[in-house]
Length: 275
Image (tube, rainbow, N blue to C red; front, side):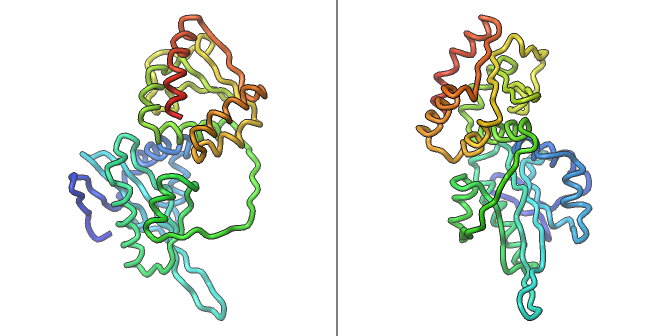
């Protein structure tokens, strides 16, 4: 990226610079829910053998990083020694409070233009089918390639649940507002992992954790296949799915103090309305 691009809103798109790392990792963890640590980002980007500062795009507003996308350039060898240059688009994130402003579209356009100027002939991206990014990318010329079946074994159920819930919540402004009032009153649990709503919102509460007083949703590992597809379901499918999990006892509700339980119960109808 030869120079920063200024958007009509005064928000700047620029290249990565040394010192951005910690803020980038915080943003990715906020948007993806347990994305990883500084060592992971450095391994994927800064320490990658062919890395340059122009491989990472930053959206900045008032000195704060609110967006990120990384590029990975690779040459693919075809038959008879022919090579084609490709680029993979990864770790795209826009701060939840800055969405619906057209920032993703601007970032998407800027990165594709940069990749083309650097000789890339093919661009690859991986998106959840039906998601906002999936739909936008289809409109900008991306086509879906059929792939062989993939098989997944869940190694860390707690991290999968935390990541899935965080991703769904941060894409629903109304739901975030409702859950914000619950903070440490509503907990999620699977296996040995346990965390309150406050952690999913990325806004650590000043109140001490007291899960024994709050309402806790205890998930069985067998509930994860449904939950991983939750964001791509229709509202009716989500309600049916949650009802099925409750009836099959794959999700159990444990109530804490009567006062907290009543507070959570008053929010249930509003929460269901946001699903």
